[in-house]
Each structure stands twice: as structure tokens, then as C-alpha cells.
Image (tube, rainbow, N blue to C red; front, side, top):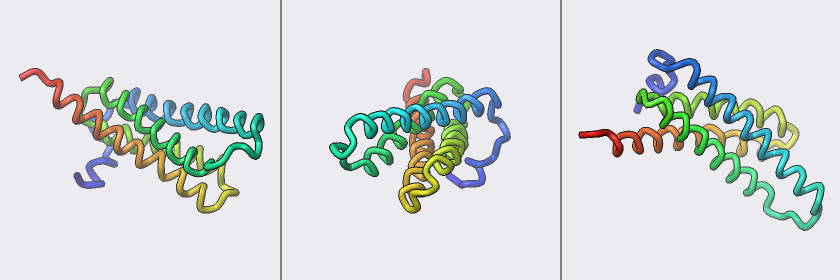
Length: 131
């Protein structure tokens, strides 16, 4: 699929677009507060934090995009996922900008998760379509 078609907002429902963006922002804030509380509580016992952040953000963004794509049912799940991921990317970038490369990696996971979640939602809807 062409990137210009994915980024084109024609045919999208603004409410679902805002839901995808708000869901990704809320998921990122909630996940980072959870990780922050675990690090504050257990300190040096917490290892593998970079992998945890990337995987958690990817799966969270994937879930949000999947749910929005299934709710919208308008064959624009990729668009909702990518724009939701971009909103999450901005918030994550602002929260972790001092971390350098880790900030870029975790931020990109939001977009990749949104893209994959949107495409999974569209595939799920195609399999459920009555014949």
C-alpha cells in the first residue's frame, strides 16, 4: 500500500482519528508511569528496561490501533493506526528526549505498532465480512 494513501485523511472519521490519538497518548502515559513506579520501587533490580519500553509501547499501540480499526469498520485502519502512533511518538519523544537513541527507538515503536495494529484490524474485518 502506498504511503500517500495511508496518510490521506479523506474518508476518515474524525472521531475515530481522535480516539486513536488519545488512546495512544493515554497508553503511553499510563505505561511510562507504571514503569516509573516499578523502577522507583525496585531500583537496581530492574534490568532490560530498554527492551521493556520498546515492547510495551509497540504492543500498546498495536492494541489501540486494532481496536479503533475494528470499531471504525471503514477500511481506514492503517490511517488511524499511523496517526495514533504519530501522536504517541510525539508524547514519547517529549518524555524521553534526554535518552538519545533510546528515545528514537521507543518513539518509532509507537508508529510501527500503530501500523501493524491497523493492518491486523483490517485483516480481522475482512475475515468476518459476511459472504
